[in-house]
Amino acid sequence: MNFSYTEEQLMLQGMVQKFVQKDYDFDTRNKIVASDKGYSEDNWQTFAELGWLSVPFTEEDGGFGGSAVDLIVMMEEFGKAILVEPFVPTAVFCGELVSSLGNDSQKADLIEKIMGGSLQLACAHAEQSGRYNPASVSTTAVTEGDSIVLNGEKISVLNGANADKLLVVARESGETTAKDGISVFIVDASTEGVEIQSYTNVDGKNAAKITLTSVKISVDSRLGAAGKALPGLESGIDRATLAVCAEAVGSLEALLKKTVEYSKIRKQFGTPIGTFQALQHRMADMFIECQLARSIVIMAAMSLDSNDSDAEKSKAVSAAKSRIGKAIRKVGQESIQIHGGIGVTNELDISHLFKSVTALDVMFGNSDYHTKRFSSL
Image (cartoon, rainbow, N blue to C red; front, side, top):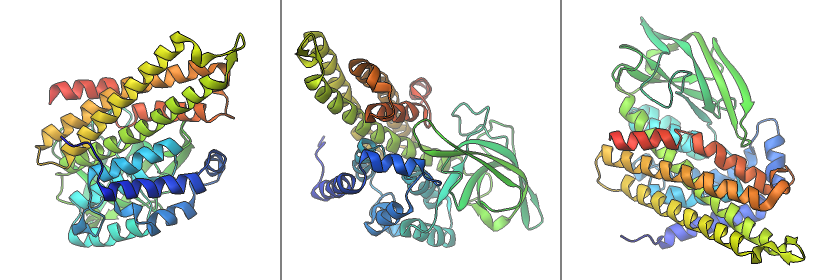
């Protein structure tokens, strides 16, 4: 099995690294987080111009190729920079939903706008009682003539406040946890009856709670066949999960690097703490966790790019997320402890990296959930 990146992937990695070094330093990132939208529209247009928004899409959809390995190459670098632009919710998660469920007309319209940087999307799928189960949907979709009426409440909608359109997961038939009867609908964020309560997550990224009260949309707004959206939704969640795993790997590597550097300059009893054998052993363990995490993410990406069955692909993603959760706890906590009190101050990027990986740990299912999911597949 070859874990080496291709020449094109190394070029893509180099492009992201140059952008981060030139235009996305820590102070710039903090100013972006503090802005009204919580992300930079200029940066988003730069992503479009450089072709990064086309990376998650296949050539058939007009994209870069849709390779999962290409995706993790980018996400690692985004993780190192603690990037807050809504790449995962718009281009990866919603992009996969549109690609796998949409008809030709919907795909031609939406994907072109996503890649061009003119359309922001958010998927409203999670609910209060869902516990990471994508099939647990109580939001209702009732057909009334040529219209569909949506009622329900969605939580933790990534990019929910900035989205031009929402992809709302709702149930047309069946019990709350039934696998059949789930559909995805395209809803303009400005539609009457859509209430969006925006907030900022602990990692600085935007999210929202969305309430749908008698929201009336056209039947043409449905993505794919009625009640058959669950496989596409699961595929989208798996790809988004892989993306945040790769993002976490990048953040963990940044935590390790900065912790090692700090141990060389921080002195105790007149001696750099990096010379203490006990701390050397702890940092060696951090390095091992980073390497294990990176390897399993690459393995999962290769599985998504292979001819494995859907079950095997989902199993590989869950294995990666479970392993990433363990690495986050080990590397994240050790980095804070070795830094001491300064490690939790807002003035140091270590605290922001720690908050980022803490949020990534629970995004799209925590380690316990994916361990159980792995064993059940």
